[in-house]
Length: 546
Image (tube, rainbow, N blue to C red; front, top):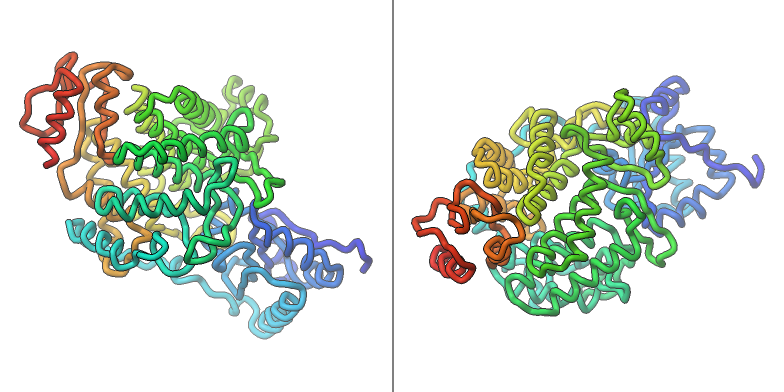
């Protein structure tokens, strides 16, 4: 051993687990992220210690995993935060784990795991209950879901500092959007707290605040978090007309463009000090950004927001989506020309080539849900995108929908990836997208499939809190008549723009609809004459929603 001894990290994959099996060693997983300060500190201070590195190399098979690039690994092995330090059997079953470990703590757990492995071998491993194949808690989809979660807004509300809960505070944009229609005061008070405490000088939004009073922010800024906050602030502007909320949304857009735009996609994150920028183009993050920017454009006619959204959509369409299949990411250093050449040669599509070049997974539920949502938003605002949305949704239903609750990805892969995981968050996002798609296409099969996905978790409603209020929002859309505005005029017309500004962010607007007379708009399923002017449309909406 020398001072130069380093941990011999392997890449995640079957080859690494096969090596562990051949060598008779347990596996050490180190789950890390570019934006995570503690991850970098542990890598330097703990794994950088030569004796620790030697012990790891001698007794374990070490695998380092970027959790943003491999979200299915993250969801199966997350120990409650990052870094996650996880010990498994060569088959991937869990032995033990922790989050950050300084050198002394790491030595202790290393010794304990070694002793356990020597005594029990593969029998020391276990499969987490969420992966045990148990049925999801199904139940009927009814008004009680929305009512319960609206009640949770009240019971978990922090009346002193705003937000929900009495510990760390997160922006929780989907909960804010749920509250905008159920208790606007809570929604706006929370957004005001986010604006005061989590918005950086560059317009970006910090990930969360460690204290109940929104102080001590975790200063990393992630694309997905910022996109969610941008949409929530834009929707607050729709409901209130308060220019402050539009200004915050504009500021977040500026941050995305200045700090995360790589030239072909929005990157994934900026580290706490701004010195680590991950410019990987992730499918889900870029879809969330496109959706949020289109939301802002719909309410403001901001051409810069539209251009940024179109750029993100182009990246998704050209690089990551191929006949409905969505690849999780494309590396900023990936061989774009090679991918395009392969597609032109007919050997594989650009999405396939990108996947092969970067080792990216595909057909992930969260990606499919967000890409479907983004292209549904493009159809509503720009009059184009429905074909892509439909192809992505159809493939996801086919590949991931073997039961009522969707899987998070294909049930294949190393470690515990072959164990189906059916997350409520991903199912909620996808169900919401399917409700949009049903309205845009007129195909109620999408709506019924959304109902099945929501019903798969409805039996657990009484155990749900404000953190999953999005479940209540999509359940409400399934239990009451949706607000769908069919516009017999093209996208960009005055009547279409007025429809987009109807003060209900859960509505669906269908431009150039064959369900409405030329030059008029109708409220689908409502007994009202066609509206031939923006003012008349607003009057009819007001009457219909009284």
